Image (cartoon, rainbow, N blue to C red; front, side, top):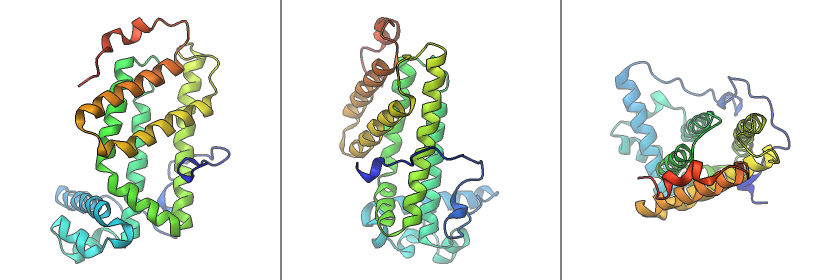
Length: 240
């Protein structure tokens, strides 16, 4: 199996404080309270994504990131201890964003249109994180802690989605014969692969791809006795 889709054998508990603190003593930096400081931090993270996309993790420098954010190197160090901590912060923020995407699926009787909109939103988000994907892969090759953290977070996300599927089965909205974890893994793998491709797709094709993926997932998880027209007839054309 490709490392990109490896998960821990069993979902570990997910304490609210779980995060970067266990990685080589790197406590995640606190988000500033002042709006001006938050804006600088946001510019630094955005600049890092751009530099990582262009140069990768090893080729990225703190000087280049600071220059891209239009701040001094000294300002960089007032927000982040190192390039590694900055990347880990981006990884954690992306994990949190993915968790919020799952929360959007919690209305168990989610409509086809809602699912399609959720997937399209995830594909559009992925365009922003091309640099993050490149950088984290490079770092994971030489940093076992980062690789382990990523596996743990993917496992937690899979467990959350599996719980959503389980609840959907129990109330009769989703197919009773679904394997919760296997179905969650399949859906996550599909979305992750689409996110890899999306940066090369024109916007119109991105919309059609989200529509096709939504149809595949919806037909896979909804009961066979459910009339497709009840859920998809209003979405014969991709959403814009």
